[in-house]
Amino acid sequence: MKTLVLTTLMSVLSLNVFASGEQDKTEERSELASQVRDMVVNEDLFDVMQYSGELSIQFTVDENNQLHVTEVSTDDFSLEYHVRRTLDNVKVAATNTMVGKTISLVIDLVQH
Image (cartoon, rainbow, N blue to C red; front, side, top):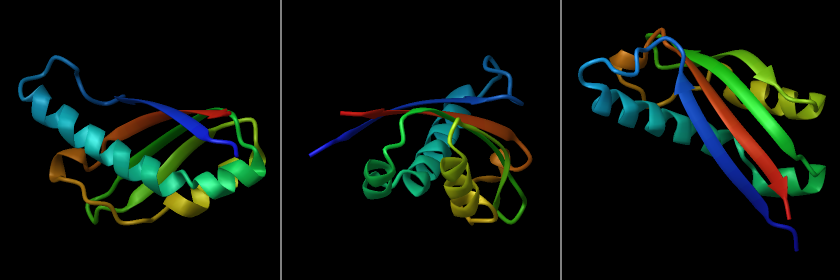
């Protein structure tokens, strides 16, 4: 049976990496990225559709803790559709420090 190996890289475009209190912000971003990754990745679906390659997602969080997808980069239209349908307007557990920030998440999809 095939297994799906995922590698995730996340960066926040609108925050300075060397700002004070960065440790807490990094943990918050990592937790938010983990929530988003868990919502997007469906191993059964990915195995059936044989998704592979790089998936890049940019999103913001509003004051109601809802995600708003601003960009999805992938070579597969159905994967882009899945990401947008899964994430847009979904509530997440986010702190006020994440509100209005643009967050980028890159997921490498590798089929074995």
